[in-house]
Length: 460
Image 1 (cartoon, one colour):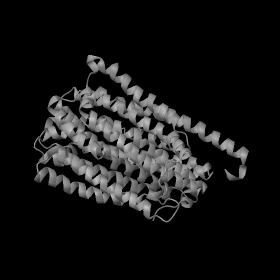
Image 2: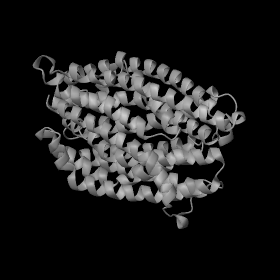
Image 3: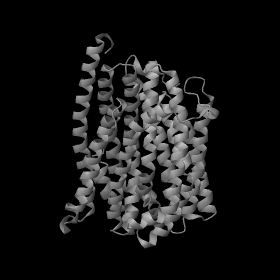
Image 4: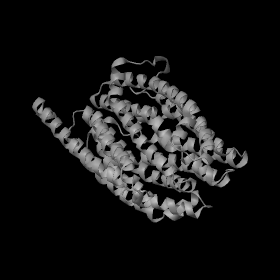
C-alpha cells in the first residue's frame, strides 16, 4: 500500500523511508537493466557489434542534456503536490496535477522537434568518431521521435511519488521493461535492425509506461485524480512549478553539459575507449540510481513535512537519508569496482582492450560514488523546503564549473591528458559541492525553525 501523507508526517521515520525508497530503487534498477539490455543485445546480436555499443553509448550525455531541462519541471510538480498534500490543500493539488500534465505534453513536443532536427549536428559538435556518428544519429532520431512518452511518464511518476505511491511506477516500468527486452530481441536479433531496433523498442516500451501512469491518475478517487477533460494550465500553479522545477531542470541540463564536454574528451581517445566507457557508464548507473532514490525520498518526505509545518522532522529526514545513501554508495559502488571485469565482459565480450579502459572508469568513479549520493540527498532536502535556485547555483559552480575548468586547464597538460586525470574530476567536484550544500542546508534549516518558533512555538 502507498504511504499516506499523514504517515509521512507522523511517527518513526526510518522504516517508512526504507519502505518508500525500495520501490524507487527497484524501479530505477529495472529501468537500467532494460537500458543495459539495449547495449547487451546490440553488442551481441547487432551487425556492428562493438561499434553499435559505442554508438548507443555516445548518445547518453547528449540525450540527457536535452531531456533533463524539461524533465526538471517534474521535480517542481512533485514538490508542489507534496506541499499541498502536507498542508491539506486539495484544490491546490487538483490544479497542480491538471497543470503538470499538459505542461509535460508541451515539453515533449519541444524536445521532439529539437532532438529530431539537430541530432547529427550535436553529435558532430561533440566530436563523435566518424565510424560511429551515423549509427548514433539513427538511434537519436528515433528516440526523440517518441520522447514525449518519456516526459509524460516522468511527470506522472513524480506526482504519484509525491502522493506516497512508489509501487505503481515500479509495476508499470516492469511491464514496459519486459516488453522492451522482448522487442529488442525481435528487432535486433531476428529482424537485424541494429541500433534502430533498440531505439524503437525503447520508444514503444516508454509509451506503454506513460499510458499506464496516466490511467492510474485517471482512476484515483482522491484529490490526485486526473480528469483529462479538465486539463488546464493554471497560472499560479505553473509559476510555482517553474520556480522550483526550472532551476532543477537547468541544473540537470548544465550538469549534462559538463558530461557532454567530458564525453567529447573521451571521444578523442577513439572508439575502443568509447566502448569501454559506455559499458562502464551503464554499470555505474545502477549504483547512481540506488543512491538517487534516497534523494527522491528526501525530496518528497521533506516536502510533505514542510507543507505540514513539521520542520523539526526535516533534520531527522536529512540525517537518515544521508546515512542510508552513504551505506548504499559504499556497498554497491565497491561491488561494481571489484567485479568490474566480469560485469564489463557481459557488454563487450569481443574486446579485452575496451574492458581494460572500462575498469579505469569504474575505479575512479564507482569506489567514491557515495560522495555523489550525499550531495544529491542534501540537494533533495533543500528543494523539498522550496528552495531550488541555491542548490542549482552550487551544483553548477561546484560540479559543472569545476569539471569544465579541469578539462580546459589540468587535462590540457600533456602529462595529465589521460583518462585517469579526466575521471578524477568527478569525486573532487562531488565532495566540494556537498560541503557547500550542507552549509546552505544548515543555514536554511535553522532559519526556518527560528521563523516558525517566533510565529507559533507549539507547531514546530
